Amino acid sequence: MIKYDLKCDRGHGFEAWFRNSVGFDEQKAAQEIACPECGSAAIEKAPMAPRLPGKTNSSRAAAVRRELLALREKVEQECDYVGNRFAEEARKIHYGESEARSIYGETSGENAKQLAEEGVAFARIPWVKKESA
Image (cartoon, rainbow, N blue to C red; front, side, top):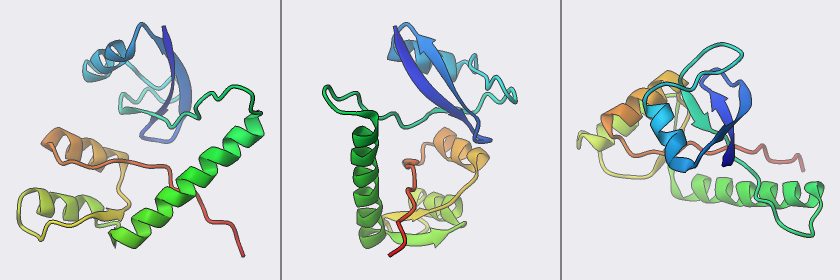
């Protein structure tokens, strides 16, 4: 059995148990998983902190935060920010209507679902806020 932290497209978080990772994928594809709060079937795995032996929860959380901040910095340095035009720009790149390049920005859960259905390669990452200097 495996437990996943899940999140619907409306931002509600919840946990669910599955026989294995394939079981999750099959149930998700069949839209058999629904948010207990709103009933949405647009479900994604939420980021989960790894369990590292001998570390406290706060030190694990701090380590994950550092990694996510490093990822954010790399994305900001190496990719073009397209804002709320992410879905539109990703499609243009996918279909060869725009220059192939790495981009980042914002999109709705529904647009992300449509991109995935079209076979557009993208990833959703948790965008950790930078601390004030």
